Image (tube, rainbow, N blue to C red; front, side):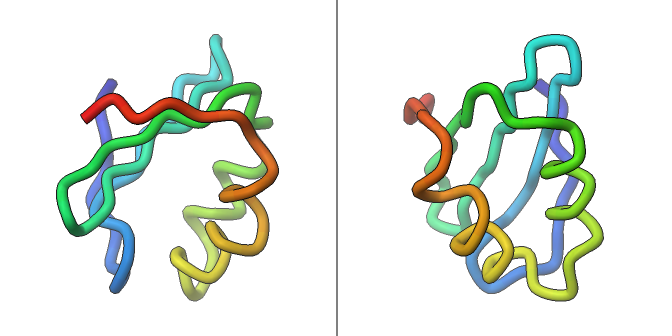
Length: 70
């Protein structure tokens, strides 16, 4: 999945597949996680948030199932 770099103290890059609703996040330590059944609106809000890390912790982290892929 293609990810876009983001300016964040926690997140390095973010990708999203609209057809499968999979959100992929690379953290600054190099770990990559995929979050499942994430609506497109959540991805859009994450990308436009003033703090990507805060948005992630408040709205994604404990709300969607995930797998570590790297």
